[in-house]
Image: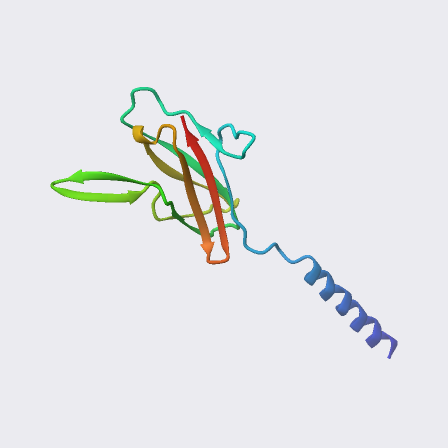
Length: 135
């Protein structure tokens, strides 16, 4: 009888430890490898005389997680008489097994002096934004 009580007690304690030590819920943290000013904006130094350039946004989330990207900021090109407008960041990426990842952002000269926004999301509940200034 006592053995059953001890076994049941151990199971309850073990199960409560599992519940308390659950892995964290999904999350998404965005950052850049550049200076961040006192207002929280990352500063991107646009290369002199370049017609266009790229920068990167880095992220941390759970391993092997698909991260979707968008931006309210866009660029326009004219190709064979067609006007094509696209966001400065495209599509999606997957985090690596160490939970990190990187996405490329397109820049061009007209962005100098602007504050741009990148939006990353895992689903409708896990959304993260990052603002940066091109100078």
